[in-house]
Length: 420
Image (cartoon, rainbow, N blue to C red; front, side, top):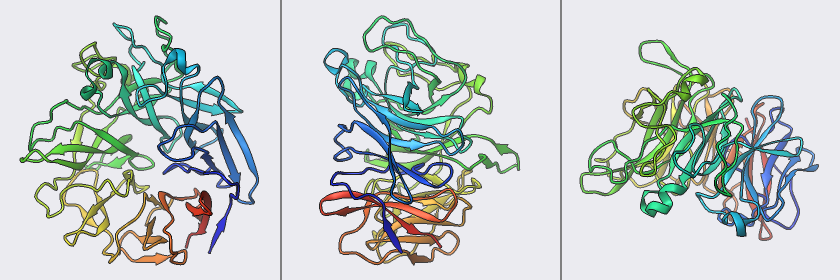
């Protein structure tokens, strides 16, 4: 059974995760005309009964989008915010945007910006994207592009993964119209050399990250890693071809440790990107270069998602027949496990049931429930002529519903399906 929640003749855009409020009663969305057109003015939410509320309205030439909700109370929202007065401060771009925390209709800037040397620890120098709270509602992950590197050499403006922690507000000196304060201490946790060595674990792009476990994961020695992020990293094969693999970074348990620099400055230099805190090292989990179809797929676009107990990180990769399947791998590494053995390719991003054991995904033009252990698939919506939009299939925190998108009369609308 499925139910349509929005009906207005305009697009409604769900993010790929954290689209439900903590009480499972509202879905948050933005109103961009398409994913690639960042021109929406409002962040909104709709209830299970169809009631609509505006959460925030951008002003002064700015636009907003890609909204997610906090998994804990008090209810907060995260979003991308474009620059106000863009003719004076630069127009929206990957390296010209910021994250905001929205509460009671007010947007507070998340990531401070300092683009004038010598830069400020805890501030960034560019734009952040897809902001997602950790399961405890404390830390925030994001992807990042750097304005300093973009101006130095566009090929060195490499996508990276970062983390914002509520350690302290960051207030850099204001020497440029695009410099501003931020509520959180922000760092990058991935490393991307501009020219990865062929056949190595080096990457030049880190993206589509996801928090590992509700409380991290168990290491092989039985101890607990309390905080970690998995992400996709683009490696190079021995022949120099780009191959996307699964990576993980273990994060400090204490927020204060994010302010301890490693071998390179947290804030970066005029010739180098910001660097991870001391002890934060990325680790490669998958090694697929020799497979018939190497690497994770980029179509459908998807984000790595961990089982709630942190035991397995799910991703999409082709099987030997070229069919896109769900796979999983342990945070400690090892051989990937093929979860689905479907005759049809997976068609969307996906999410885990909040208690684990099953996933929601779109396949064969239907919303499907997948049993994680057996890979058995159960059709939750009838097969339609046009597949649901592949951007989202997100379980509610209470496990009752799955939110997804359909095209209706040329407009993207929000639907829910009953989970089982």
